[in-house]
Length: 468
Image (cartoon, rainbow, N blue to C red; front, top):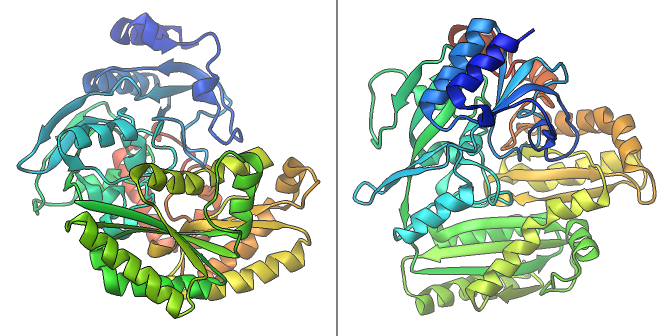
């Protein structure tokens, strides 16, 4: 039925870059193994012009296209449906660093660049690119921008949106918009960049970006501290912010069960503190020298001990020890995966509301589902929690998910709304949360979003069925 389209795509992209046979699960199965589709073909363009040609051909044949970066998404937004009629467009061959402007403190990279590679390129040039998240070894910059990724440094540097100055995008008609400006001030009309950041491939395909770089800190220090309550974590955050200011670059919290899962499934990862109801991971980066920064950082921890905000603390003595502490935090999602399917939540709340929200929602879930286990961890510094629910021990995780996910989501999302929060902080909407968005977003906001989609993609060919 689509033989002419496939032939035209192979003529333009090369036969090796239009895949229709063999094992395509690397593109058709999502990271969580919850979403499996069937693509008409997997396209691997190597330039923005090839992306444009592919979208022009798709539009001419009325075939929809699902863009995909590193396939590390968590909401089913980057895999095709099971119809076998959608093209999967992978950006992984768009992997060049186009240039670094040291005076302007910017780096321009293609969308398929792995986040870790961008960090390394910035580091080699003497700069810091601060976006950091657990999947940085496989997630791509295009995907990070398409979902407005957050990560562990949002407290200091902001989401992916705040780190992006310009974009190159191919629209649904196959036209290339070259907006790779390195300008920090540009008021020439609507900010098109912000339309595409966070749009999850529904408005255009990001092919390159110009990103902010920062001077490397002279000192970077990491510590773990144990506490008894989230209220104490919140108080410690306030103390650290007052004393460390913008130098506080990370403030993560992990409940007891989340670190228990890491110990259970990755016993080789030694934890520096005894188990506690809550553990905090703090990072401080400063332009001062190591000695001055360490004195200030340890002073905050000492005061927290005196004020009984924390029970114990361990400060990394080297970069290797710091990496070990962060590895514990970043291993929580992997440990959850080993434990079995679970109900994931990516929620944002005012920091002031988090202790009460957790106390009440924990109780509501425990009453509704005796024996459930809560894996609560995340970025307290910016109000983003991964408030996940694991079924009772010994039961079928898959059955628990299938039977109770909707009810659990309702309890959690109703509570999030009550406290003025968001049910999607950094993972996006995708297919998983599309219906929830339709229920919980205001009709006015939904109307404007649909109008934008209609204007930019009137034939609904770009990632249909996602977001709106």
